[in-house]
Length: 255
Ligand code: SF4
Image (cartoon, rainbow, N blue to C red; front, side, top):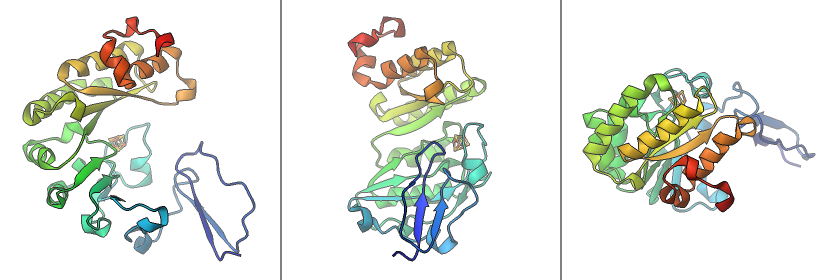
């Protein structure tokens, strides 16, 4: 019999573990269950035991938590904090592995961003900003540091119509500053939340013009309209997207 079993899930729609467990105690947590059950500070900040999952070449972790934007489709501000704050130094979860996967929700919103970007730069290994970067917060210093950090791809996001001018301006700045090819520059395009299809299409074409690779994200996908799902198939399958210029020419029967 186990002394204690921890069960977690990320999404409310994820299946739980509904089978009998031979244990004295079960603790359930994670955003899929609720936002209240938090890990003790010493557990939250411990270096992960990567050997449990046979992970040798990649370090995973958070340097910051929280985000001030409070986007209505996102749980981060409610779950963590309505402010991005530093929670760790890189060395707390990185032990020289050749890859770092950062899970920070909005690193650029943190007051300590420059110090943290320096830590990533000095690691001199490949960094993946898995949750994307907030283009609206780019400035000369962060652009300089980001372009010096080794990374295969930079992801940004363009979610709302109201912020289009600010986002386009910063994407133009970053493109010009970095000179990176679109293979290295990607933008998440949120659909099926509060945008109409014409704005979805506009963002795809505009990003292409700006030299960025759009990537369609669908909110509440099971209830998305067919057009939105086709848009996702057309845009996210890069072979099709590069060979079929216009959405109206995309024939889903061919791919
Ligand atoms: S900016 Fe990103 S992390 Fe922050 S609330 Fe919006 S979606 Fe969430």
